[in-house]
Image 1 (cartoon, rainbow, N blue to C red):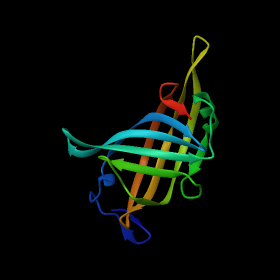
Image 2 (cartoon, rainbow, N blue to C red):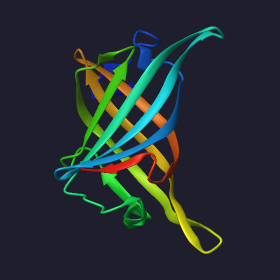
Image 3 (cartoon, helix red, strand yellow):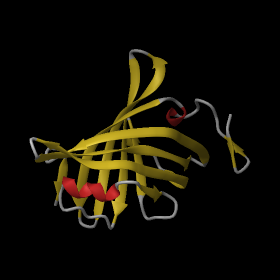
Length: 158
């Protein structure tokens, strides 16, 4: 059991206390905000039973013109508490109402993939962790990892 600010984390009382498998979907730029989508599942300890999960990272005032502009994120850290960024989590079609306590997204590597000297996609990889309050209970997401291959089929600007 981990503690935070003298509150105890309840083990397995919330879906976020279980193992979460996440993969990237893509990104959308709308108005002044870029949203990254991560799709995944929550391991319930049963091979045949998982809960679907969607996590969104909303980054205001970041407006890449195309997927290749995402290389600006290379070796950058977004402090989720000190910025206007928002993390939204949806489990089995229900959004979780939460408050960010602390956390970060670390974009360790962002680079362009070339094939035959042509730009094909941006490859973005990194780590994330954060602590949130859900129904006044602290929850921790740690050791998150993401690898995104983003091209014109999963990146939209409008």
